[in-house]
Length: 305
Image (cartoon, rainbow, N blue to C red; front, side, top):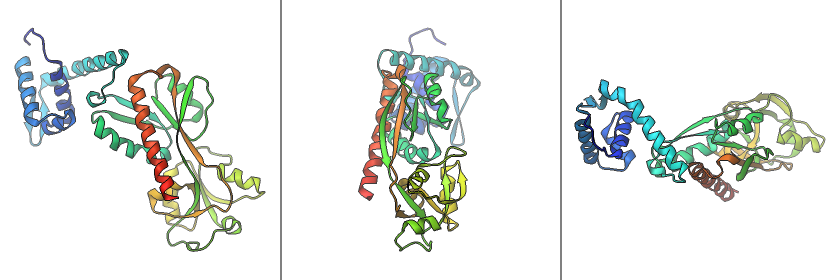
């Protein structure tokens, strides 16, 4: 390679072509024209005295030299990005950072699709990694940096955690569209006569609905208890079982909703982060994006009430 100063933007072009195996896709991600990508690739080829990428069908296959230098180029770009973060800068449109979110399958289904759509518009190379975990480990995961943001419907009181309310959702009783109860008023006696499916992240213990019924001296018949929220709508669609859960779940699966015949506190969804990353500009940006999605969910709920 020639010993002279090289335009750092070329490294970014190399990295995106390597990742996407497409000049067209690289241009879309970098918001530059395909001729500009081709020109950058030509300069890279001249600098390294190697083709770097060879067309094979619709894909650009890396040469052995490109395979060899790709890890070093990625590390260099990551180091530069970390340096910008340390200096209080974050450019979402130029970032390829992966953010890690810790949340349940229900909250993932509600929040992640609109969040990804939003990020594709303003930060097309940024990616997300989502995972579930025990609520008792939330503080540890955030402190260790294993998660950048935690999202939960339970209020955590660890003084090392910061939190903000994202949105709230109200509970309804859901049944399949052709259920015998459709078109009828759901009274407490009707509700207690139904058989129920109960989603809960815990293997035992009462949920919000059960606690509300206990205050009335009542108990429902639970035929299925599942740790997976997104399984339960499938069960409801194929049986006469009823599901009492946040209304947003019913909207996602086309289930018939009925107001509960007793009072249940709304589900309040909060995001959590560790105090040590309070001023991290990249994570400040991430929180603002998630907060905007939470506002959209709340607005949608209010409009459907």
